[in-house]
Length: 233
Ligand SMILES: O=C(c1ccccc1)c1ccc(-c2nc3ccccc3n2[C@H](C(=O)NC2CCCCC2)C2CCCCC2)cc1
Image (cartoon, rainbow, N blue to C red):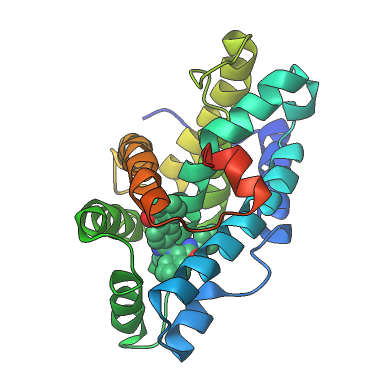
């Protein structure tokens, strides 16, 4: 059995990413809001666009703190952010949903999300994803590094130098692999299961563009930032 250890450089990298991940939290807690009150579909859509808009701003700040990201080609930096924003939103939503809450709160939260006005055909894949993330019981280091790995996906549209992105992503993947072995020694395949969630996440974000199309017919307003990121309007 190989002795797995995180070297000093990897520990520094992990600290930088976790600090950035914790520093750039969503300003107000959407779960608390949803647990407090039942909203109309219009109010929920507004809440969603507000949360998603502030999450994109938070994502940009977090991404700037990923070591090496700012040395990538600037247009590639934009392409990576644009290509990962929806996935990062669902990953963060899954983490919000899977957070330890007092008994019964998760059921109420699930009910509120199910009744929020989002078309039904989208609910099953979305909650399957949320529950599969919850079952992993990720520690915050794993959540932060998994988000960084999602952002540093080399095969996003319009990336000119995928090799440079791949080098950064591989550094993160190596740290995550070691972390998984150290945090979940009993589960041999934990790291593989974690990466499998990223495949599920990409599928979910494909639904998302179709979701937007259906929403567009109902002529909902998006913020300028979301128009940019979500390719709408
Ligand atoms: O399908 C979605 C979508 C989004 C945009 C276009 C098309 C589809 C789409 C996207 C997120 C969620 C979603 N799943 C959640 C799980 C738990 C708690 C809240 C959740 N939300 C939404 C939310 O605010 N998410 C935040 C979380 C922090 C990071 C930014 C996002 C609310 C918004 C109020 C109404 C009910 C859901 C649910 C659905």
